[in-house]
Image (cartoon, rainbow, N blue to C red; front, side, top):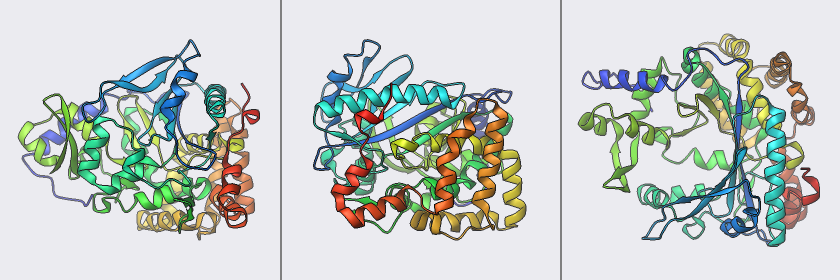
Length: 441
């Protein structure tokens, strides 16, 4: 996403799209900020191979609060169940058949999310155990490699595969832990930039995907390391290439990227043109922009459908520390006024470039990566703890695992590497498995 001079023909289109996009966010900053969690979990057979999680739907539907959701299949398939929805949470089939995402409703605080997630995961773990399967607190499928065989048969996924070829298949194995935090209209650009800037901090403390395809990778966060190479010239993943000046700049920047799939005649088909060319022909088509923007996967995203900042770079966590990422992400957002200023002032004029370098290092080395500011992570945790304390819910207690990780200089990926080197894949599976007795309802 290189910086470009605005095309005079498109400038009013970018401005109109920016205005409509901003309208999805409240005028005032929400107080307190509401939160919602999207947590993806790999599900594997006893051998460690990815399973077809659709076989769990009927067992989960014994919960009368859940209703099936249907989606259009590819290759002429009729509609099939793509997820289950209830009043507090939903299950959704991810790109990979062996990954289930649990999404909560918007909540007032992290303890409300914790209670909902305990219930949802308990039901999922119980259903999987009855099938002889395991649900993992881990950030990638550990044994099954990315493949078309385990891709969910959704029409749009097949079209994305046709547009991106084999790199798209990486999405069949990844598992993230993402948080949505409500933000106001006036802070959208600042929060987008800041959310990108804190990406390496989240990865340093929360990476958990060092082993995939049955082998140890060069990365603590393989899900971020591999994704960084996918259409790298378009900066679709990880940090933005640079901070955005305003929302129109953001719209223009992501419009340079390829419009991967388009709706045409009731179908979703692959494409290969820059989105700017679509805008030149069709004008300020806001639904088309949202469809395009949905397939830009940067570590921090503005979500107009919810009025939130979505923070994306963390891998799924070990179950005993499952709320650590949510606490970190929320605390970082609440601490933005202090931490954003601190990072810019102390890192200097090249603050963005220095954090991008740190980003590359933490993906590989986790908490062994050299910090760009002395004691940065300790200072960050101190500020996030204070910001959570100020919310008044006691959420700061959920940061305790992160303090332990920092003290030991060992994040979940670094622990998982030690287990894998000592006990192989069997040991890693035992280490990552969420056991029925460990989940309280």
